[in-house]
Image (cartoon, rainbow, N blue to C red; front, side, top):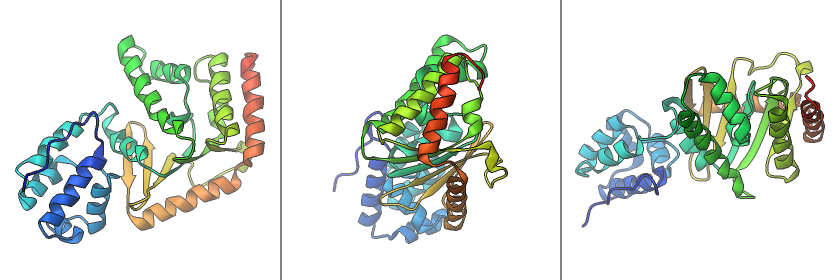
Amino acid sequence: MPGPKDLDPSSSPRAMIGAELRYARENAGLSQAELGEPLFVSGSFIGQLEAGTRRLHLEYAVQIDEILNTKGFFERNCRALARSKYPDHFAEAAEAEAVASAIREYAPTLIPGLLQTRAYAQAMFRRGRPTAKEEVIEELVAARLERAHLLDDPTSPLLWTVLDEAVLRRMVGAGPIMAEALCHIATLAREHRVIVQVLPFTAGAHMAMEGSLKLMTFDAAPPLAYLQGLGTGRLEDDSATVAHHDLTFHLLAADALSPQESLALIDSVAEDYAHEEQP
């Protein structure tokens, strides 16, 4: 029986390598739990790899090649797929985001990447990298805007975002840049492409004051939570942990303004920025 073909990472995301993993595992007569045991991972983790919601890391790929006798296939393709346009701490989350059926996110300080405009992204990256060459900034911006193509599909994924009021009030770039960025969010909301709520300052203390939160659900795999800090990020797949973060998001949404009230506030702040007035 012919072996699996090497993947072209430019045209095949993790879903393809996951399908090959399932084929090779079933051909070897192993269950997901049986393959996971020598790797010291759960059967559900193997299922996430096969569904394409988790990245296959090199150390696992090498062991899987040995267990399934796949002659270095997974190691070779794992090395190819590891070449990501995103920072290491975010690469796996970006790949999971691309295949999610629903994304719920709390943003404490910045407009989330999926909702950013080119000018906003440029201003943000330039501020954080004041000595970087223009081509470096443009590569970062291009990768950021490429992610936003997820919203081109009018039905999937469901994107529900809770923005802290600080996101609206913190000026990134000049007033016109903020006005455009907020109008872009308002347009997406009016087109029923996203659900947006604003968590006002008057809501007071809440469970997510220490950082951002992204929850992703999938059609054929367990949900994931992504927590991000300064230059760091972590994917969580433990069911109890994800459930706790799910509760946190719903509590934030309960304290936030309604979508209609949120849209009115976004419009008001955008108008202030358009007139170059500090809100």
